Length: 588
Image (cartoon, rainbow, N blue to C red; front, side, top):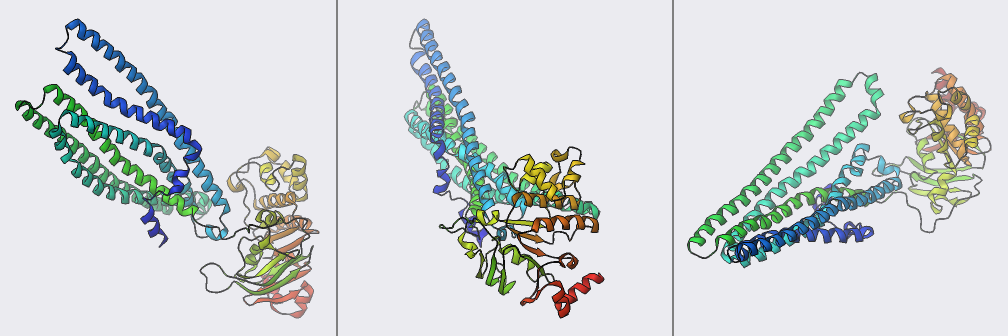
């Protein structure tokens, strides 16, 4: 339904579209003024030629005629210079204005991407989002720049040429006018076909971007399964669909442009034939017919430009509709207007009758969850896959909002505080470590953007990362590659821990942080985690139960909520669910 709505609206440019001109109104008005001058000058040249042939040659003596013509030539040279200046401004500054507006749109969309919540990204593909940020916006900026400019030039040339043609000969002008409905019907039919083709091109290009991003991000998986041929086949298929959609587009474009050229040529032929008959009937002078023929192009060109503009309009409007489609999506997680800053956090956290289910899901992931964690407590969450351990932890920083109930920190409902202050007080170490392209130093500093080098080194030492960093080729300035591909799993994990040490939050969440590591790396990382957790409220989602034996509290989650709670010894003595899980993991 949403896509259908977008398709219905994609030709509509709302007032928000025109608001992007506001910061550059001075540049826009100057661009329009120069476009006006360019259009006006194009109307003057045939008039000067007509004046020379009708009012100078054969009227004045040779010397007088030459003198007048030379003055007119000076005028035309001046017009050429003025035309050059105005055309240069329109081309250079007009395009620059469009680029500025494109940058504004891109910044606005990227900022909106940052505000959208996890629920949005769970249903989106990165390649599609990238396409909206690049290809779509380029076509919008072409519309921003060329749209008003083409309209101004075309209307001035169209109505200016029309007035001059009527002044020269009304009957010949009516003959030209007879072709206008044919041109308009032809343009409307073909533009409808091209519009559908452009929309399909855009969708297919986004699909290629999506597949390309997916392939390059997972290239190691591709190679490990020796599935290069399969990936090439998938890419070829997407590329083939794009080529086919472009073939159809060019078929319609060829029909449109060749048809328009044929119609305009036919107008000229008909005018010459009719003009010849008028000359024979002594109803028009030869010089006036020549001027009339010269003005036909000035009359037809703006019609062609306006019909070409419809192509540009459709392409840009489709891109704008896709831009608005994302911009009109409201974040699932919203900050209250009167939200307060959460500061001086001790770390007392309470789940009060919490229930949660994902959007469009029928059943709750969590229900009737009640849990109170005192500041500084080390709480381990265990249970089989799918019982909601990660979901429960994701509710604390409001990556998702509870369906019912509430979560409080130091007695404050987390929905009543600003998102920035809430998340600034929570540190997360996850199994899937994400390192940004850049250096080791850059990645650690991400935990505190204004950190000094001394603070970064201290954080690395606390995370047991300093020694291996110093063994890297450029130490802290070593480039880690995309997603940290040049480092081992244990090294990446220790950098992520150093990042959290630098952040220094009162609340920690460890989401199976060591489950993907070998025993040796796990031991080093576990030591770092325990050091980080000291005197902080800590939630640990454990894959290997041996790593949480020393936890003060172990919470056993099932589909029905909290089933067991206690220390390792207490739960083992109980010989219940936890004991079963522990014995199973020990055997494994």
